[in-house]
Image 1 (cartoon, rainbow, N blue to C red):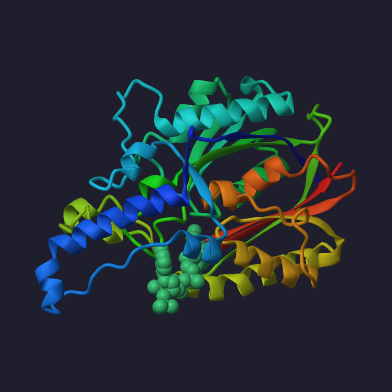
Image 2: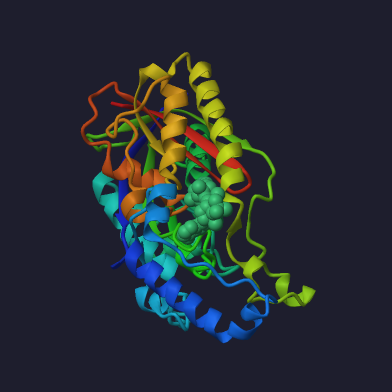
Length: 373
Ligand SMILES: CC(C)(COP(=O)(O)OP(=O)(O)OC[C@H]1O[C@@H](n2cnc3c(N)ncnc32)[C@H](O)[C@@H]1OP(=O)(O)O)[C@@H](O)C(=O)NCCC(=O)NCCS
């Protein structure tokens, strides 16, 4: 069987960092003005006052301190509280195309691969900025890549599911070099007026080059030993935005057309599912938790990662073993585990084993076991 190697990764980080303090200040200014607007109804007991958010809660509950976004001004304006992204001409490169090209060029350079030698481009992310033409086909043209391209969406697990698709395509011989790109504009699906979740997301884009080992030239390679995917239907994370909104006459601005979750339930249900997936996958490869040098886990909640790492390793993980990037990036959906992999793998010795694991809406979870060459 053909051996598949990851030979390069890239990361696009948006220009604006927004700390918890600024986000909470905007949220609380809005709460104050809403409560003042409804003061009479609140005084008459007809309406509950909105509660303020707090920086200490955010850090304690999630581990998030800051996030990068494409536009901070619109998010931090209490009158707007959503990013302002100018509409682009159909002939201009789309926003996700632009983010994707920046991350892809870095990954291609690291891999020593010319765009023209890529024969499959997969854009894998939670939200696509239009129905069609596929962003992946646009990116393929913008980069000058060959072969074919397609978009896919498995929410936070999009990148690991795409690594699975890329690995299978290379093993089957339908592609030799695959580019997986995850342009996540999470600030556009986040309800910045929802106290429970206004702090959880950030924007970023990652890119990964996977190749048939026989054609790869990069010195640094991570062999994909295996991929394993799991899904279990749940409404605990849901977003009802879709092309039928127009014809069902539902309100396109309603809160259910944005990200909605039952965070505590997600925490409780997803952690055991993910730990079992990793355990089972390792067992199939005749490996155990203590064979792993690193866990590049999905970056949604620090406590979730601590718990999953503890279950897989059978002990507390050190910060080096299970790197956290959500403190600076927040949850960047499918990009999160790939950002961790991008930033925290250079120190691993040849032969070291690790897992890239993502989990999220669906529920969906994807695990990739890699070994440093
Ligand atoms: C979202 C999350 C950080 C919330 O943390 P939590 O500890 O579960 O918090 P809860 O929602 O249970 O709320 C706990 C308390 O804090 C309060 N609270 C909620 N948001 C708050 C805020 N922004 N500021 C201050 N207090 C807040 C709640 O009202 C509640 O108060 P109570 O105990 O008096 O009822 C956490 O559940 C999580 O990350 N879950 C996993 C989510 C995930 O992985 N999703 C995948 C997305 S792709």
